[in-house]
Image (cartoon, rainbow, N blue to C red; front, side, top):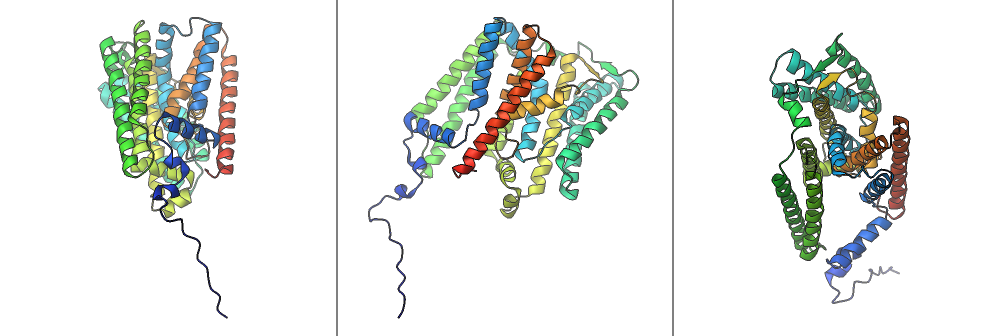
Length: 422
């Protein structure tokens, strides 16, 4: 007797094809559907930047209550400028964390770059632009060496960069020599850029308007692309509301900062670097490859991604950004010395990336993590300084915030696994 195999029942005739898609892809595109999708993501452990934004708000409120000077325009202008050198270094840390690796030498590399630009510019008499390019190139070479050790010999990045931390600290001391310090001329373009260059008020408002228009344009293009693929997308009214909110928020911030000295060009450079990295990570093939490698390197390799090349690009980018941060730190202080890149620079850069929402397990995070994370750390530092508390409290509070950020990341990761979104 022959067994007869009964095929599975077909969907009822007349069932729209869209009914067979995931429910999240069929939600209304209006504000209600968007909020519903956002709540689903939070329940599934995809917290995004929500914790760090909430934490930054709480820190600002508490410090303002304790000292009304904290949110003054003068203090905020100084706070934003002080964020930049370590923030740029943290931007590179975000890149290596996204692929599940670490770089412990960014502080030493930034100190070496500070010393290199000072020696080449002041002692050797090279043009300042040439000195800057040479210092950043040194950072790129360091990253390339790290990548070769990692790709060819399989040495863990923790060990490679720990060795680099010690070696480049020694090289920095050797470069500076017996003097131990080199002062940059106060009238040089580099020092003026870091200390005295601020945007005119009208240009600040132009950039704010351009940011709002760019947000709407990019959102509209993305929504149209999703609609053409049959997926849910944000409505035009929601995109307009989002852009209007950004315009109002940034416009108020610009007006408030312009009551003091305004927005420094160095902070604008930092934001530009954040936006460029965000575009590279979210809109390019390289960025998708970075997330793929961070999620599962072996799966990425089998999918045809050149994993070694991704690691090389990430290590080189991290070291180059560390060098840029070192150059900006030297310009801000108008000097390079034996303490450049030392102290808590290394730890603050790594802490900023993690506090900003970049996962230590790889594959999750954005370029905005560096910006938000360093704002949290610098806010704590500035607020406690205004309260006349010594640095011991700053280290304690920063450590607690870092532990809380990693705990949230671990809990969210466990929640994503349990809901099948790992």
